[in-house]
Amino acid sequence: MNSNLLRLFLLPYLSGLACQLIKIFNHWIIGKKLEFTPNLLNLGGLPSAHSAATITLTTLIALYYGFTSPLFIIALFLSIFIMGEAYVVRGVISRHSELIKIIAKSVPEKELANTYMPGRIGHTPVEVIIGLIFGVLFALAFAGI
Image (cartoon, rainbow, N blue to C red; front, top):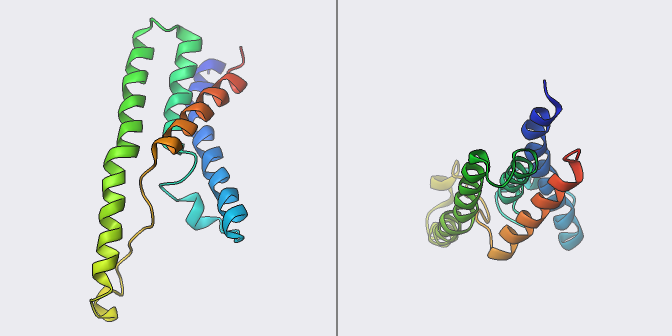
């Protein structure tokens, strides 16, 4: 397999994974508690893994095929769409989740025994932008150019 194709496939995943690992250490530094599983699967927080992964792919496509490539335009469109979803849609879901938790406090515990309500799901604009910057830098660092 062409090394550029391998990078296009692997680096976005590794970029997202690196962001999730950063979240673990952020939580450890701020909360003084090292927890791998909840933080590795966390859908919110700093930096946005979705932003980083999609922008890593978009940056790699720009580097390998050029900014005028149809592939770059498609990747840029999808990156903007996913970053918008990470902020707007999941932000709304996160606020609804918090409201449901408040309402659920008035319901008897046994009725909620199997109900899982995640913490923060969405991202702030800063988290999305930091993920974007991380994704560009990650791609530049490992592009092999």
